[in-house]
Length: 292
Ligand code: NAP
Image (cartoon, rainbow, N blue to C red; front, side, top):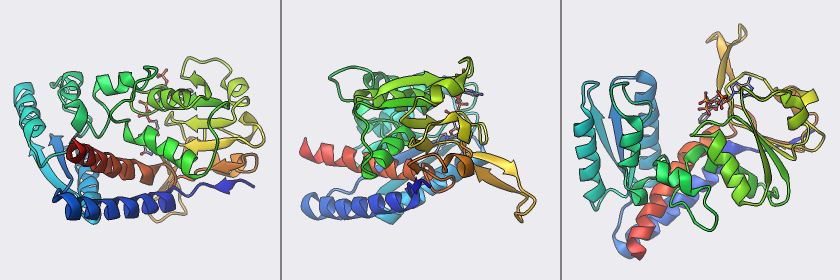
């Protein structure tokens, strides 16, 4: 039976560490880390995500500045706001909540977030630097960083091992693959056009699943002893639950945990790490400012 990698507990530890570091930064340098959140439009899910991020900031002593703009906001208006936030001393990190309304040029907006304040890691330059040998990206995107932190804090060796990543999205699959590569894993990326995925997943020492397909990875698709990081968040019908549904990952937990040496549950695995990494990046941005 696999060891459960308890993302909720690890994220709680990280938040405590951040809270202590925020207090030290205030006491020693009089600086409070600040995160500006930019939400455009009235997508209720996005509004909830931003609310949760700001609440998490408050819990660790990070100041947050919420900017809620109407769906009719123009590209120029968003760009001007980013310029203003980029020059503010009390804003160390800037987060633009995605998705943006369709009339806005998302890539141009993400590229306008200054690199040293890009705590979400979605500026295309930051993403690209993840793949440049010998260069350190100022920030990595939070969910992939959460996956790596789960492995590292669970003392799971990455170097020299064979890692298979399911999914090649810009926000999860590709950056997590680059981060594993930078840590000397031998990495294979699979996507929707990959034939015979099971023959590849069976070679994995470390398997990261980020495809958004409920219980896609079954017990016969992995080898004994594999370490599994399940990024998927999928809502499936469940009559036994009062809400009529529940959340499952991209991995069939019951089957795969019989084979794996370690595995993240869903919920309570990667999910709680994402916001913890956002807080950590905001703290780091403020620490870097203080250090000059
Ligand atoms: P996405 O942008 O939809 O990308 C999905 C990726 O999976 C694509 O690369 C796609 O291939 C690939 N894929 C889809 N079906 C496949 C199949 N049958 N076999 C192999 N590959 C397949 O999704 P995402 O944003 O990366 O998110 C992935 C999952 O992670 C979702 O469940 C999402 O909710 C979850 N997620 C969780 C967190 C968290 O905080 N825990 C954060 C972000 C996302 P193509 O490129 O060929 O289309």
